[in-house]
Length: 592
Image (cartoon, rainbow, N blue to C red; front, top):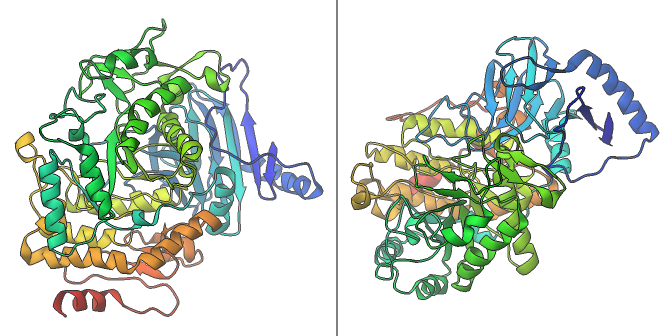
């Protein structure tokens, strides 16, 4: 038992003969404290708690899991665990601890892209398992009286964090893993984004319509068509290959910049055969058990390999051959996709010799920190070469501590449906209470749909009070006629609804001083931008069960409209003085 402060201890379990006990996450940045009298008293109390609460053991199942088991009180609630479209209280559920892409998900999706093994209890403690291997959490599902967390490899540890309330527990967790640095101010505005812009002419035409409608935006995000004309067999080009559609990218980016519009480019960790970088990247791929470059033969996007991002030379290679080249073109910010990784067979091996691990490690041992190391690589290069620039990095996957690396994760490929919208509240709030402050959604929904403009407007109204405001969805049209396409830009919405969408964008900008203050409080005081009601009202026995409202900072309660055709909804207001400003604001913007 190792003390990490006046209310935090680390417990390590070492089974007999256990040989895969490396700790490779770098999630925790604080050091153990000395054995002072205060810590000695703390340890005495925690020993008694631990004897009653936790039992570590090896579980005899087909997964070979090593398990921590905690007793649960009858009325105890457990929150957190990362990105799940489940009720905020996760008691009664079992789910994998494994970063997982889920295309077109909606309510009930239990395993999404960003798994964080940090949990808080209504009984005044938190648990952080600093282990990135494949695992599971069973929170009273199999046995209502117990919370189990199991892992297949890595150091078997748990940080026990005690606190008087949720604020103290979350703040102590942030002391362990770090807060998120301030973003560039433009990141709190509106983005022009879709899957995806296919030519300079198209993107400039849409940008022109946005300006004509008086709809502000601070960035344009380019999905994968900047490096190829098709969805498949183009990952790894990392270059503007079609000179007809993209005749002068540097000038285009410069023209946007003259209007204070930043350019964001996507890239993936997969390099496919037939692309410009396949031959050069081959030696940086993850390998098989014999040490040969591993090539995926059944990957949706094509045949090819996965960069072994744990190797510093691989990180240096993509930094030089992608990021630096596009920075020279004027690119200002980045988007990394498929970083779970989306395709990651258990037979793949990774080299972590740069971090002191002598053996090759299996995919299941490092899967959950692949995206984290991608985040780390990009952030560290920026800190070294562009120390005066605040990094904006849109990403989909990571681990505890990834917030230190300037990440702005979106919630994956959500369905364009009312259930998809409803799912964003538990996803966002669960992630925020798991220490990932800038989680947000593809506003309007990403996949499928039926052209429901009411849904689109309601989603933008909700998104105005989330960490990032970014309308985004599938709009492929002639590229893939079989995929349902719907424009994500408010300027292209039918005129009957356009003013409602526009008012959400304008409200976002009107809130900028308040919103940027939230960003400052996260960086300096470890406060969340968005939180469930129970975080600010821990003694309110009604608030702890409210999942369809949330707090945007400590002064704004948001109750989004989540049902089609709804003209009213019930709102629970905790004790205090409340003022209904939003309805008046929207009516004024729309009707004058």
